[in-house]
Image (cartoon, rainbow over all chains, first blue to last red; front, side):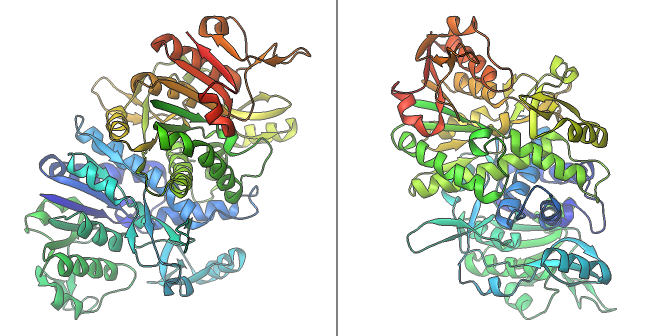
Length: 301
Length: 301
């Protein structure tokens, strides 16, 4: 069986937690322990988020006195692919010493005319109180919006149109290699009319990239792994309860928060409706249980 | 023919030049233009330095008010692999649109008891005047030393002992894929007596990693590409002149500056003496001429 597993950036760095390297490595080790049993029995392709991490590097780059221009998000996203990818590679290798594991720097083509470039909507980086948010916005020329009770930076998040490194990913997975790729949704690039590729100052949603990846590599299942147990029916109400199994069509009728569960639901629906295969959303540490349907929310056609 | 080409970090960011992303992307584009003709005709494996870049990220991490502990050099090195690897991948793909190119996050095993951990000697990051150097040293607890007429941070640079991702690199190269790997000498990791891998707060010399890589993948030639035309006979004297061809044994009798040409000479000698094949040292933009012997310094057995 071929599995695409997407790890939430928040599962690697919890909300409000300090971004210390050691703390993140600890979370990655737990993720690797949860994924290793799947990798031992199936073809596994892993992608991961980078929201908190790319936000931190963006702040560092913006504060660097030696730089006239902070690095754009494609470059910072590539940095997070290296960093998080290395942590995952190392932790998985410690779980599976004899497995071949490839961690690929990989790019996602987006359309230069994607409307997302005119309406930044994806949260990155830490949350601020309102006064600090005003200062951060004025200081860096960034847009900030409310995410729950905190303010966070928002950046353009264009739709993933094509995975430029797909042939390699498929070839490696078919050869039995565990592949880590598409980190942070892939480094966003655009292609001009001459075919030339350029980086884009944006962040691609990693769940939507995972859905495209799962569809195009012919995955049997897409696992969207996060820090909650399941999708909630009646989310935000007193009567909220976990959805155990639902069709993509049914799920599309409901509404979910744009910043967190929304993209996972959209990704699951895209994959299930494109392929007829199943997707599951749930807690990272329960990855194996999600696969056999004993935990999380299963999304079927 | 199989070629390993090592690009100097200084060829991607010249001494004293600002580390703006656009400037580095421009240098990478020039590097890709120089390498593309080789990649079109031969199996090409590319590695690159990261001295200036890892130094910049280390400064940013040390200055980050949200971090109690700056990120260690393995993590920062992995970030530079993502960043520089992405630039190379993108620029090479623009030169060779139909080629498969793999950019791998990759690790280099070093010995935990390597004496380099007790004697930091590898320069990273920007140069300072003496007064600034004292402040930087006191502020971050870093060791600094004189590099020419400036002061720079020095970090441990243990010898590369094993390339942990070698089987993948060989497999990809044999399949006709252009491989970018071992950036910054590879992310340094140590292995304990139980076999467990951990990151090391160090930087591996990328030329020595390139020599090990070239030896172990069975390269026919090792190209050490930098920002000077050739190895100089009588370096630093009025009578200095370029060495056109030299045996490894002869080259080992001469002395070279530890920070720049020294590791290239050592790397070339190691590869040539281990394999009997040839190495060349010279200007990045003359890569094709280095290969046919019409430029640079050729090192033979």
